[in-house]
Length: 326
Ligand SMILES: NC(=O)c1ccc[n+]([C@@H]2O[C@H](COP(=O)([O-])OP(=O)(O)OC[C@H]3O[C@@H](n4cnc5c(N)ncnc54)[C@H](OP(=O)(O)O)[C@@H]3O)[C@@H](O)[C@H]2O)c1
Image (cartoon, rainbow, N blue to C red; front, side):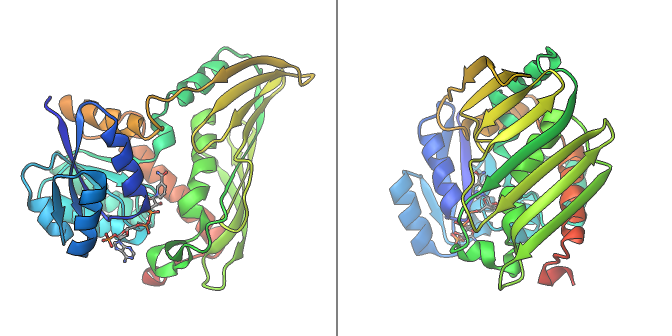
């Protein structure tokens, strides 16, 4: 396939990071950026060496040279942005959390599937090579039978207006909590049958610090937490009856260690990235598009929906509904 022309909507923080990734990648072009403001789009285009700048999202969707739309807007906007892409028959890579709730996720996935149009979620850890390294350690039975998992992801991000705004589906859970959750789901390869959660809320009413306890049918307990108030070490542990795995930075694994029952180090794997970690979701999109697939095997549509259902369940436990859901 020719170079994949990526069109981004929402000239914010993560769009800038993905643009920096594409800049270093063969096979992809930073083609178009769309913002709600043409001035902002033009500045972003010039700073990041894009070809086109648009002052509305719809104009970008109308550009026949855009091969893949990357949605980099707040969670509250994802469903309507995907509807717009669908209207113009554009394949989509949509940022996490996929939507604000499972109802929106099911609706948009059904619409894309009906139109035979590619759609996936930019939950970058699902696409990373570190996932297979962890899976292989578990399969090799190096740590024995797993019964406990622990993971955290906290960044002191609460000064960011988007994260504090309930109307944009802000809060720690959808922004950061999705990573410890994804870490547990990937390592255990199943979904919990029981969920408990508590949280501390911000003055604006979103979750600022959330603690989750998931019970899996395989008799594994997972303890997960996330916060936009404090910083954490971002570590993930998978504990078995013969030792444990320690993952340094579950948000973008830097190293993976296997320890024996007596805590001694059995093995350490350093993770080397091609660029910065965002490249793998792009590789997956290109491959799926070239092969005519409608989804990525790393995160099939059915799993996107199950994760959104789980996030809904956690939000029920912490009594968090966004204003537009009432
Ligand atoms: N994968 C990752 O590592 C990662 C990291 C950070 C964030 N994310 C995800 O990426 C998405 C965007 O996050 P971000 O940190 O890039 O956010 P951000 O810096 O606030 O940028 C979001 C952009 O969305 C656009 N937008 C559209 N409707 C908006 C509205 N009603 N209010 C505010 N902005 C609006 C704005 O662009 P225009 O003004 O140009 O239209 C804004 O710049 C979220 O889903 C987030 O969870 C992913």
